[in-house]
Image 1 (cartoon, rainbow, N blue to C red):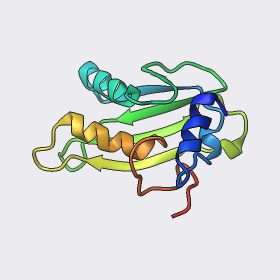
Image 2: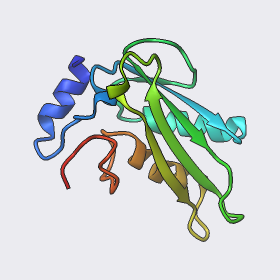
Image 3: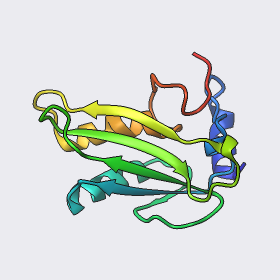
Image 4: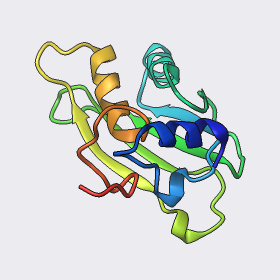
Length: 139
């Protein structure tokens, strides 16, 4: 496990980064679907804040990289972000992938807040996530 993730995991005794998808990750690429360049830049900048690994807005190929995709297709006419994560290079089917539920904007919610909520679900080092399948955490 890279030093950034191992030191993060050591400080989080209640939480671990257990999923094979995230083991050994040294970088994350975040790309967007159905988004403006400004929206995608906001997502990347938000993901970079406090991240223990390098995050950029490209789809590069590296064994120690996870590729996130943010799909901004509206749901029932409301802004939404649906995140998915997969290894940049699939070495083993056991690495898995993750397809998160759509995070739909609440009434009057701005894009930055919606981005925070979507990334909280997708990135194992961010806020509490109700969907534990991503990290393999126990409920």
